[in-house]
Length: 443
Ligand SMILES: Cc1ncc(COP(=O)(O)O)c(C=O)c1O
Image 1 (cartoon, rainbow, N blue to C red):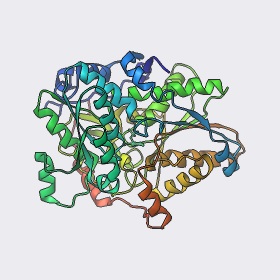
Image 2: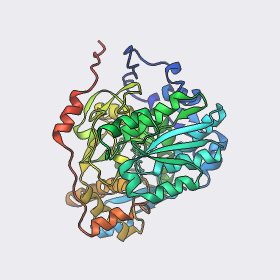
Image 3: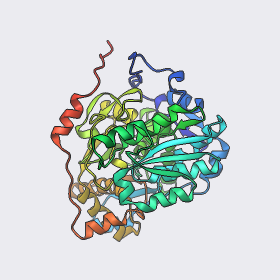
Image 4: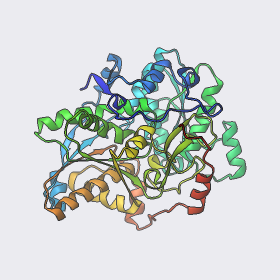
């Protein structure tokens, strides 16, 4: 198990654009972020050190499920008739069932160390809310989770797990915050979005000194914590005498993708082999393939700083498709920056294409993937089929970021032929993009 997290900021050929204060349009400093995050996490957010030590109490908890297994998907290869070798890292072995505890645990640790008593957060699929509930409990923190309404209704047992870990979980938009009440007044049946849930969590965190906010993706420190995935995979692949030609990950806010890919990209930037790296996103919320690379807010109420990222516009509400964790309007600034530098590629697939891939995976490898993870499965299968067409035996590595045990209603709908390929409203996208804040390009 790694002793350090890997920080890709140390190896980038060009620094990413600064995060800006929305009032002054000047770069934010640590003090601007202090109402929301403990200083250790803020320092990680801006660090350019290549390696950041994982504190021993965090490693001790990681040991409950880490190192996570790396599998060779022999049966999937056979089912596809591909000469490619497919490896996958399985993050569904964590207590929450996904990669999210990799960052929930250090975030809870640094908050507890700084004297925080309560954490607020958002959750889409419920994976992140579950993870922070678990981590908060271990460090004696109260946790309040705003779960996106559509996912709260689709997956009632996620709330039960959060409550089992001692957290409180509310559907978002909620009546608990001023912003939630405003959204509900306009549209009482609003399905919610991650952008709205973030606004609610940030609003409450900013009101009380003993309360901080925790984000499950997007930010640099979250991506940093997830690099344990790729660092472990490097060692495990070496044991199998293998190295990836292609790396595939699903992208919502970008954290599990960064987790598996950044250590390999960094290795390439330092002169090592450079694998192709493919980000897979949902066609119904395609920030990397259809979004604009521009400064935007991370939330819908515009309470956060401005970051330059691929965005569909902070007011964009994606249709209620089943990969709740991928329904975010923006992409991590670091992932967006790598896309701009040409160091990664991106593709988008519809939800039925992804479920079809997930079912083939379950029938050959035995694990039922989360709908989010099905995007990576689909991406890896398409790469393996390309290898078959081209007669190449490339090595493909993908991140199976979570299991789908709480998503069986979605699978049932898929088998009943009721799952539709939801598309977003082009007019709504145009309106959301037209509403992007105007930020002068630095000269
Ligand atoms: C299983 C799973 N995968 C992926 C994601 C998307 O987040 P990220 O892109 O940060 O990995 C989520 C988010 O909730 C998730 O639950």
